[in-house]
Length: 205
Length: 109
Image (cartoon, rainbow over all chains, first blue to last red; front, top):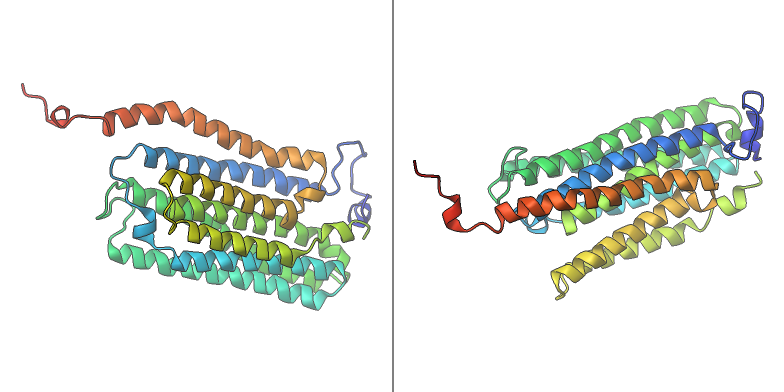
């Protein structure tokens, strides 16, 4: 049993072989599994609609990938700052941990801003939720639905990470916030993982 | 913390792997390969990148079997969903792609 789990020994139920190291972490994994089914459904439906459409526009030609490739790189970088923040917290350096968590949130905020810029640019060119000049109207519908759903996740993640900066700042012992930050990290990496899929299926393919 | 050492692998190595795989993905779409080949390679690269993030950034590699089972469930459901959508997809494709021009004309009464 780890130090984190042993700290909460007083509130843990009786142990069995299935008792997790952290109930919070198990809860986040179950939430993420449900969320992954949600994203999986959206992407599978997107694939079915695209495969059965006679006039689906070429996403690569319509959407462009230069900006999105930079956004992908930004999210990968923010995942690295997240794990570095957790690593520093594990080493007991609250200052560096807070800084890296803040950089992660900043990366997320820049990502959402770039997405807003991309949306406004595409809307200006005629890509709407109910139609577009290039072909199937469901192209715009699915694009805004999937990228919007992901963008909401990133926005939620930025708020979550800023809350974690506050948690780390207010708890005197770095170890006391380690578990909470690790759980927040799971959410953030999941958002990165989903974007890897969205980037491939909605932009590159 | 006892689990600290194995819980923090070389994150920078994972970062470079992810960055290089992204560059390969982008380079692939400009390559003179068959569309199907590019599609299969892009799917494989995306799954590889997702596995790297889950295994090392999300520490799935160092987690218990219970967490691993929870993580694998959505993957199975998503795969199932693709097969569930296939028959409906082919039925629609027959109607939309395989139609002759005459069949699209409005019926005369």
